[in-house]
Image (cartoon, rainbow, N blue to C red):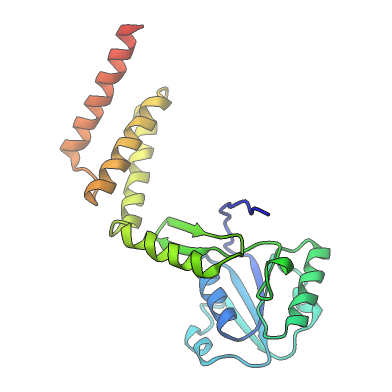
Length: 218
């Protein structure tokens, strides 16, 4: 089965994680980076959790046995305990309640999968093998990270600002806006930086000439 990848804003979502080991810790770190509110429940936690603090109230830990009531109001659930039977029970409950669930026990007990993530500012790349080989996903992540330009996040932010400028300058020319944005994105990937003001003007003139040429030929 193939899994459809989509990006969703989880800021403010209540995410319940059951488990206090390394798997749960990795999930917690990943979700905190995207603004989720987390409730982690386990009878014991690895020391790394102590370093996280409470993340300005966004991270709550309960050192006790899991109860089904803990899932009330949850937007997302992760069953990451070392008890496979418990993970499966959580999965069944969540599926019946139509709550997205990811289980450390395997993709059969998960309604969604965690990709291997690359995050640089607004740039997010998710890599998944459909749960078949997390090792391969991790390998691909390292390969892709190795070829990404430095400061790609800042580049994306600057391109976003330019895109807004193009939308105001050329409100009736979507094709021109796409060409300008595409040219600048390609150039920034080649050089590792946004073209300076002079180069930007040259790009605009080039696009205008192309537009005039098409107009004249028609």
